Length: 244
Image (cartoon, rainbow, N blue to C red):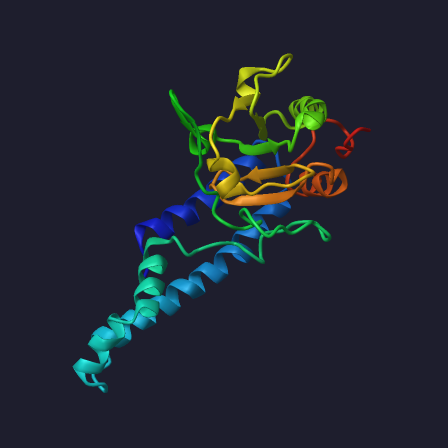
């Protein structure tokens, strides 16, 4: 048993990976991640199908007992979220470098990228920013002291991975010397609610299939460099080296 939502997400994962390899933007090794990431989802779908099958067709159990299962909130939530795909994630199987910092709030690597309201008038949300064919790098500085390093990172990403990644700085004020395509003013608290906060700022990389691929502190340049060199081909002849 499957569903259109599950099949659509499977297609997104495969299509963006294949397109990236065909265009020369990523190494062929990323194609192996399709099976690694989708197998747990397939197992989850099979488990949910068995739960529903047992209610509908397990005639060895009285009908009253099977009907009682459907009134259990845990059974209900597991089946509904599983059918819709809301419970599917790549947590634990999405490749990230060893030693990446884990946070107590905000989405982790492999989780679905939540939406967040950035501006009320005119309305702008994070999912509006994600509407393109590249990966999205969210740069979330904790204060003004990190703005310049964010600007420098934007320039480095554009120079080395411009066809693969769209970097976007999200902060509370307008910035100079940075394109409007790479900067968004945030005037609500919704972003912090869904993506957390850190005294050292955060960087998220959201994949084209709207799952979080990477998250860490803004100053963890080594982990970021390892992640980028693993998933993407650098425009330069040698591996991308932050600050190098």
